[in-house]
Structure formats: C-alpha cells, structure tokens
Length: 496
Ligand code: NAD
Image (tube, rainbow, N blue to C red; front, side, top):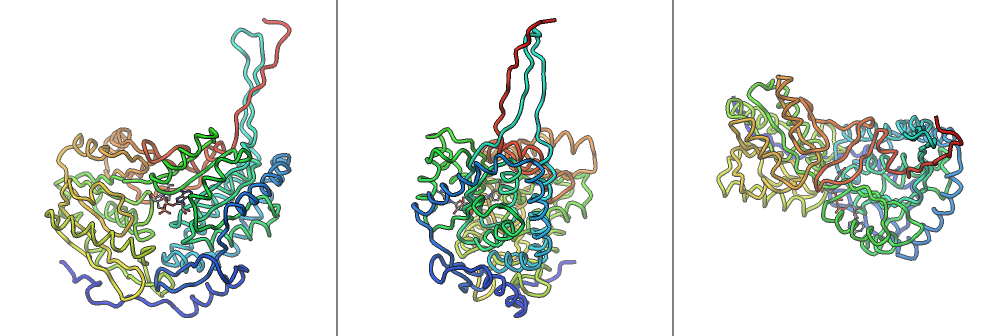
C-alpha cells in the first residue's frame, strides 16, 4: 500500500536548543578570531563562527614551521609515534559528543550520523597507531648471489593535506594520522565551509602530545592562491587531496612542476546493481543507506541504480516507501534522520536534476521538492524509469535523489555501469555468490559493496580507479602514501 509522502504534510524538525548550546560551547572554546571567513549552519543559514583568513605569506610561514618540526619528528621512534596516536584516539573518543555536535552544527548531518563519523574518523587514528610500529620492509638476495638487497621505507616529508566539507573529521584524520605514523609533518587546509571540526580535532592532537608545530591548520578564502604557492614550495614533498575531480586535475597540474608525490581521492558516480535474485529487503536497506547517508553527499554514495526488470517494480516502490517516511530537519533536532544540504547551490542542483529527469519522462515516486523556509533542504526523492540521456544519469548527484534505471541482462548492466570516466565505488546485490563475485570482478571501481551499502572501513584501502583518483587511504596501503621506498644494495664478497 502506498502511503502519503510525509514531506508534503509534516513540518521540518527544528533543532533542540540544548544541542545547539552544546555545539556553541565547543565553538566558543576554540579561540577563534572575531573577523575573517564566516562559517554558517546549513540548517538555518545563520553565521556560527568566523575563522582566520590566512594569506599566502601565512601559508608559507606554516610550511616553514611544519618543515622544521617534521625534521625532528622523522627521527622519532615508531613507538613514540604510536603512543601519541593512541593518546589522540582516546581523546577523540572521550570528546565524541563535542565533536558530533560540532560536525552537525557546521555540516548539517543528523547527530547520530555525526557520532558515527567520530567513530569512523577516530578509527583511522587507532589504526595508524597500530600500523606505526609495523614499518614495512624486506630483505632479498640478488638472483646472481652477488648482493643482498635491503628494502626500507622512509618518511616522504612535509605533506599538504586538502580536505572537503562532507566528512570534516574523517577526511582529516585519514590523512593526518598516517602522516604522523610515517614520521611526516603536515599543513592541513580544511574546506572553509566546515573548518571547525578539523581545528578542534587538531587541538586534541596537540593535547595528546603531538608536537605543537607538526600539524599546521591553514584556513583561507583563496584556496587557489594557497595551492599555487604551497605546492610549488620545494620543502613540500607530498600532496593528498580529497574533493572533486575538477580541482584534483588542477592540483595534479601544479604538482607536476615539482614532481610532487600525489594522492587524489576524487569524485564518484557509483553504480548500484540489483539483480532479480537479490534479497529485496536487503537491497532496499543497502540502497537506502548508500543514498541517504550524509543527505546523499558522499563520494561513494549510490548514484545510478540499475535494477533488473523482474524485481524493479518492487524495489522502486519499496525504496520510495522508505523515502517518504524519512524524518527531515535540523541535524540537531530530536529524531531527525535526514539533514540539510550544504548550501543553496546544492538545493538548486537537486531542483534542476529532478526537473530535467521528469521532463524527459522519469516517474517521480517520492519527494521532488525543496523544504522549509530557511536552511538548505530538499526532500528525499525517488525517480524511476530515468532515461539514460537525462542529466542525472551522468552527473555526480551529491544529494538525496535515487535515480532508478532498469536493465534486462547481466552483460548490459555491467556495460552501462562502466560507461563513465569515474571508478570510485560500485554495489552489487544478488544472493548468488557466483553472480555477485563475477559481476564485482567486472565493475571498474576501486571499492565494491557486495550486498552492502556502506563499505568504508579504516582497515580497507579506500580509493578509486579511472578519474576517481590515485592512491589509497586507510589500511596498510594508506601508510605507504606517506613513505618513500629505498633500497640498499649490499655487496657480497663471495657468490655461492
Ligand atoms: P572541492 O573539490 O570543491 O573542494 C575540496 C577542497 O579543495 C576544499 O577544501 C576546497 O576549499 C579545496 N579547493 C578547491 N579549489 C582548490 C584549489 N584550486 N587549490 C587548493 N584547494 C582547493 O570538493 P567539495 O565540494 O568540497 O567536495 C565534494 C567532492 O569531493 C565530490 O566530488 C566528492 O565526490 C569528492 N569526495 C571524494 C572523496 C573520496 O575519498 N574520493 C571523499 C569525499 C568527497
């Protein structure tokens, strides 16, 4: 039975005053300037803080300071690095509520999701505390017996870390923690839409015993001037960027001038394949989580649902039914399960994508409307029978719209799923192990969710293929991004 769309009748959930006060107490404790770049709350549009607008001279000063601290840090023992990371992890966990309120206040996601981000973000710190004491290396004998070869890893050097606004804690910790574990200093530039969480997390790192100068946070309104100056500085040896493919290309061009080691975590356009032999409820649960987490603003969020004809009606109606009942409102409100989008531009993008798809013949099963008078809200939306040539079928949506297309054969689904320059995440839902694994093998993505809508884990090597990026974050591979490989060829006097 189809129920009414809650979003046509219910008011948005308002923020709890006590939760807002909690967030604002944390902000007051950050010691921020009284003028600079304004930071807003996406649920209301109100200004909540101002942060320093650091110019190029200030950024280069941060490079100099971090570089000096990094030279000393490179000489610390693995155990010393592990100990400060363990202490930082403990403080992040202890301050879960402060961090979660701060994330929600500046970024908008529901408090429960912010708590999950604190868990996920702090997991990277613990993981790299554990990895720090396991420096990889190997010992080999040359095939002709004339040499012993010792392979070891050294800190890559000063790293510039540029992060996006959608996961303000996790995107920062999964770069800063491996840099510290590897023995590197860093200059971190958070997104100016959501800088407060990074500032707070780094303050906790200093409290945990990370040397004061080792991690420099640079907030700026001119990110292009920042990268042009800093990436060309010869003291910088590494850039790690998470954000859009377009900005990633620009940074790679800049990095080529100094042949800078680069890690690029870029945009996605994830296909989500549901086969007739999928467990329907499991597929709907996975589809729901893979789309609505973070209001759809996740690089691995499901972007193109391809559903096989035999299950498509039930899947589309089941997903729409779930979307109609989502509780939308301020992330700091009681019971909210979907928060606002980051800004008004994102709301306009949802409007345009929905209108284009409907004009081309898509069926609107749920949502499709802006919500509320203030803030940046768009109703959770399901579009079925989306034409392959509509804008939404070829765009990284980055919002709460599920766009469903139908397919007949496995081969067709794979071909359509791979018809994109992106290759970050893909999803396969099938109860057949043989089908799930064989389809996964043929999808051109770095990350595969198999009967699973939320595949991220600190122990997994997160990253994309094709134009979704270079390098990996998390896992042992994430540490290698901050290490240089060296070998010693040790002559042997006698061959065997
Ligand atoms: P964005 O590319 O606009 O910005 C990301 C960061 O880069 C921000 O800090 C921004 O200030 C900075 N920036 C922008 N131009 C710059 C320049 N010329 N020099 C230096 N820094 C610059 O992306 P966004 O809107 O913040 O984030 C959304 C995008 O990020 C989406 O495409 C999403 O898929 C992607 N993303 C990818 C991953 C991943 O791990 N692959 C994770 C999260 C987000």
